[in-house]
Length: 144
Image (cartoon, helix red, strand yellow):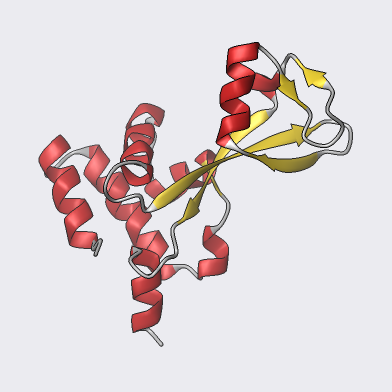
């Protein structure tokens, strides 16, 4: 089971006990533990910068990679396409994005047209993992 102490201990070992990465990670985990589950489903980079109290995008990105990959996977990285016609965001699969980078264009998720400037229209966001082993879920269950 993933616990807050496991995560913080490992990031402390990787970057140091007084590192900005550890402080950012601690701030994000505290937010996950104290926020309603329904408010943890669309966490943008900008919002995570504020939550993590980070002024350094590289440090924040390092922490987000740590929290979304590997053995802890507290956050799940997602992708969305901005449809400029109606200012609507459409979730897309990672496989669609991988194919777009290989081909040099993305097929519009709704109408199938080719979009060459897709890199300007695809955004990353994160969702908190809320399964039974997640930090957020554990804390919310303990509070009930």
